[in-house]
Length: 213
Image 1 (cartoon, rainbow, N blue to C red):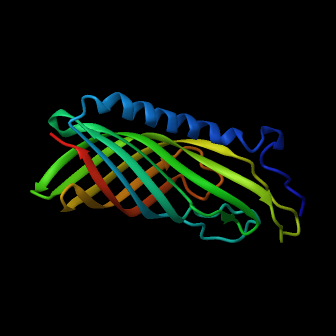
Image 2: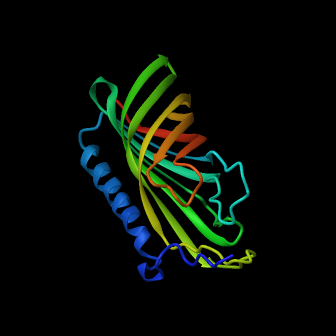
């Protein structure tokens, strides 16, 4: 079998893929500073989640892309204004490097900005419904080994645009502290490094409401 060679040109470098993430984090800080003076409510939460996507059903190809999955840490900042409408900014990443297709270390990062609508269900229970856009940054590290006779596809950093939708149900268990089970769906455009463009994230966050009406 012929060596298929690298799927990306190495001259792109390993730092380029982080740039959109840095821009996103800067936008988060500016958004937080901009809304803090007049916000009706600001929430900050951190948590953990599990990510999964459809996996390939055939091993007939030597370089079949894997399904996207694993454990992620996540954080979110949310502003809620009048009529319980607001803005949600969040990100999720793998705390440890994963092993892509068994031979190359990598780390995926998901981040998005959403419009959010909050619906009360009970005095201490509220639903958060959100939809928005964002990106996925894939950070690939040096290839460790390759067991394929015909060679391996190696990757460098890449970025993908995504559409996001999510829902969480929060419960205020003590004063302004809450726990929020949540589920998220990502449609990642041209996510060719993985088997599917459809990615799901299920997790739980713990947060605090810093200012309320």
